[in-house]
Image (tube, rainbow, N blue to C red):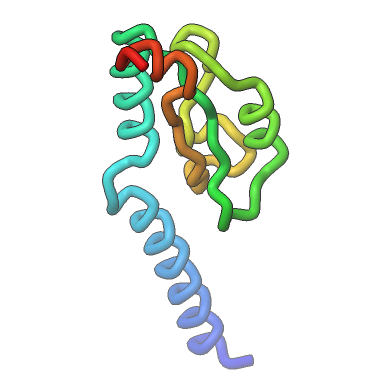
Length: 108
């Protein structure tokens, strides 16, 4: 193999790797929004459910987190997309208000 072609290929692979890493941080962090929403619910005494995204291929952690619902902010060890689950920051699960505590909060 031509050493120049091999070097070019290695350089292109390195650029592709850097681009993928940079793109992970290009959009607003999913987890920050989820944590902010969960904290706002907690401030109002509303519990939260971990909800799976129907279109995602889930890691083993997220279904377990869903099964443990509902949570308060102290009992939830992580937030969707924070990077603490096996799917890391690729998680697209959401935090949603738990139905009974939400109904109690809004007076239904």
